[in-house]
Image 1 (cartoon, one colour):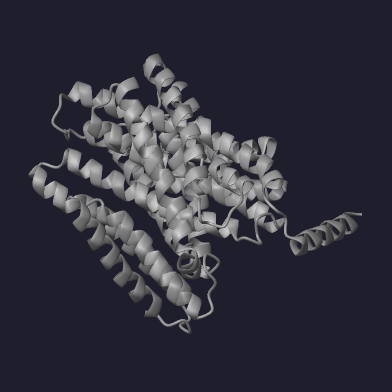
Image 2: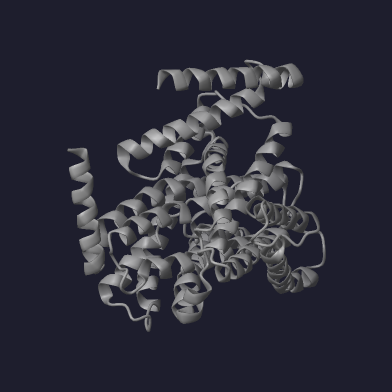
Length: 461
């Protein structure tokens, strides 16, 4: 182990030396790039330690690392590197959305489309409206800013929900009714809608065009995103052919570069709502055709590459998001009122999920479990929380004074970070505790799991 560590340190040292020789000051001991690199590496390590000690999602430790570095003045980013920060967060968003698209199972959507739409849209809509109303009156945000916050906060976090559901599925809980698969499909719909609506509202706020055109552009951007993304996904499913020697890396590049292009170009031309939907649509269509070739949904080689890529971008996303929070600059009233908004709206979402899941073939315990599962937030909030502040810092305006808009944008960022800190651990704990109590365990899975445990114990002995 010591030899491996020494070799790794040597490689890192040589890499730093080469980059320092080329870039100079930014990678010096006091340089910004070096401090950002140290932040990301530290976030990954602390997140890993956090996961091992608490069994809670590593992203919480990563987020707290970013906040710690910022408030201890261990990292500093000027405007040049803040732009790099923004671009890296956009890349992380592409990975998040592409994984959501690749994880959508057409058979599940076709068989349970009513349940998927009910669970993916209605609870999101209820919480979005609730957050918007409470933040307008408690945080004094203008209605458009309040709905911008609501569209982001209402999103469920796959980074928290998916691993927890997989653990329950592996032990057989809820498998007989397909609850884990149903929730994963609904979560992908939830995230896609949240990102698209957020992008449409943000674009309408900061666009200089006419109000009428911006209203019309919203639905058009949705249609354009779905159509263009579907065409690109179909292209990625046929070119190259599966038998090609480099089929896996080429298909990955086609989807990934297509996703980056759609997100950056849609933002550039003012159709930001189209980009996220194009990414999800391309992943869904490509995975649909790949499944016919024998590649399983969300477990095909291209999905695995995106999963590996997320390992690198997860600490970047959460560490950089946390690094934008300066505790001394936070308004205590924003934090206290924001916490009240979040907790009250989370409770409302649990109730709404329980009530809207009628006709899904679920009993009361299973409905309650789904409501508790829908509490966790993290990825979308971290990716989109700083977006409004980025635009205001870059000199763009939504029609108000710079001071007021900066205060609104900082409030949105603070609430987004607060939502991760509060709901991510709460959601993970509730899923782990209530899953075995509220879901029925499949007998076949129980036997297989018990045999695996006996085998592992015998192997250990």
